[in-house]
Image (tube, rainbow, N blue to C red; front, top):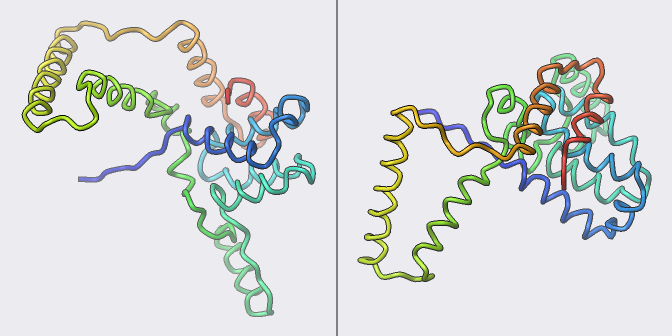
Amino acid sequence: MLILLSGCLFHFGQCVWRKFQSCGLTKKYHDDQHFHINVKKLIALAFVPVVDVVKAFELLESEFDDNADELISYFEKTWIGERKRWGNIINQMLLLITKFFSVNGRKIPQFTHELWNVYDRVVADLPRSNNAIEGCHNAFANRVLTAHPTIPKLTDKIRREQSKFEIDIEQSRQGHEPKPKKASYRKLDERIKRLVQAYNNNDLVQYLSSVAANVNL
């Protein structure tokens, strides 16, 4: 069985949010509109096809001033991949070879592009985050009502939960519609889907700006 691991857009955004807070950039984010939009463009990189992520980042990083060097360094190392340093002539020749074969000349980041990228998921109408799963976990924890339940009590709760899910599955098979999203979330999904479907890698700057306008931190 092939299992594809995928990260969560919400937690990706939260990681970036916490980092620029730790860099002392919160006030700048709220006061500087140019910086505000550029930070949201970093999150918008998740909506760029994986093959174009590095190109989009390199266009974007020049938009940040020196005050954001620590943030950009973190983002590059963690999510994009640092540039490889090529010192001697042999290494420079290797760099030319890797460029010829379309290797981007960067180290592997802490989190690969495929893990946090959601472009294909938007195209396929799949969730961009795992918040629904976490919601189920939290709801189940609330029903258990204790941090360390006994095995018999936990077993009983799991059986009841299974019965509930079996009812939900049967209702779905019978054609019952799931609980609809709020209208605001549904409209946001529709806007993002339209932007992603109209993606053009010759206009990356405008694409990032458009997606960023629909991203919240």
